[in-house]
Image 1: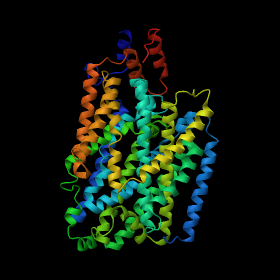
Image 2: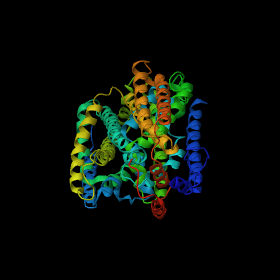
Image 3: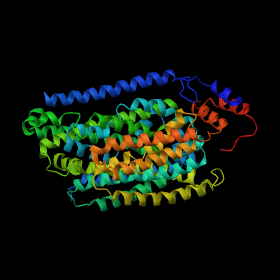
Image 4: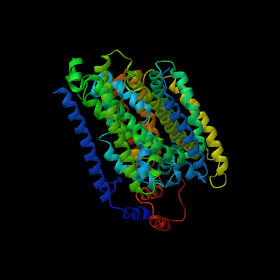
Length: 56
Length: 503
């Protein structure tokens, strides 16, 4: 039990549920996630715009 | 035979001489297994971007996508586009591969679930790579067949490609592969878009397309009712997220960089670059409807036929060099990651520190056998889209256990085995008993095996003994500790009781 108690203190967890290990994402993770999502959305909108040119 | 300009022959010969030189130079840098399999973890963002892009981009990507958009219209783009909204999740997951401080994905399974899962992944990971390489060889061979107007058949094209590939991977290891992926990635991007201006001019732009295609409105829709609809898109996207961590080459894509940020940016930028190139391949397929007419060309031959018929004579030879180079690079990645799995996760007889030379020799012989199996698979496929659908089903079988083990402490080795067996059985039943085939059946079979795998993994884990507490603590702490903060791991180890429960 000692080892579990210690391990739980090493990094903050996103959810308090028993047996779940989802760490709180770092700032780099959150900013990068948003940036990559933004690029993905922009690419998708670009393709939709290209298609609309042919359909209009 | 396609007419090759003398300059094309010079380009082809020059490329192969350059590749041999890179391989020989790289060989001098291999001093240990980390160098051979992960290039010494010394690559920056630019190299990692091109490595991720090159490793994930093969001739079959362009051939399969152009075939689908020629058949179904722009909805076919989802054959590559399905990962567009998954990429942010790759950003989140990427550091885990580096923090695991392992050489292969199989090591991660072993660290989380014990030896039996490491061995299972050793076999399944090699099977996945055989699948990937088989599809790559088949797609590339179909392109060569189309480029040469059938003068070089699929059989001879496959044999032609593997010779160079074997030499390439055996000599240089991952260092040569990543160096050449950089060059190859640049060439692929150029070739993906080179076709479009010529094709655009040939069909007469938007007015030309509208004049020659009766159903331009449905051709340029992003869904194809009855085949690629919203259900298809959601399930294929989910399938990719579930499966991608268990694809063996993803490990080196995310662990060979100098820092975590290099890996993250490199991997996500490489994946995004591929999506960008997908736009070029997709439009090549739909514009081909205006150029050739619908259903006039065998879909798998569309991309090659366009290159042969649209581009000036010299470019066809350059494309041939690109295909060969692409297969060599990708083949090398598959061969290297497979031999790493074989030696690390299956050949436990050898101690890496004491028998490195022997292990390297064994892994090189294994690589030869691996290529033979891939060739056999490549020659068994009928068409590129069906080969791609086959590949999509291989990775989630063990990907489910990866995700369960990553987030849920209660997941154990029995649950992992159960999820693998249940998902595999569900896949087989879905195709053979329920007849869920082709694009129409794809989302049904995917939802069936994902649900079966998750359900069996969760239920069996809850009914059986959990993994040892100490092993779980060590695993979760390791994957949450960035490289360079090993003092934290040492402090953790110092706090543990002396007796370690065997896993």
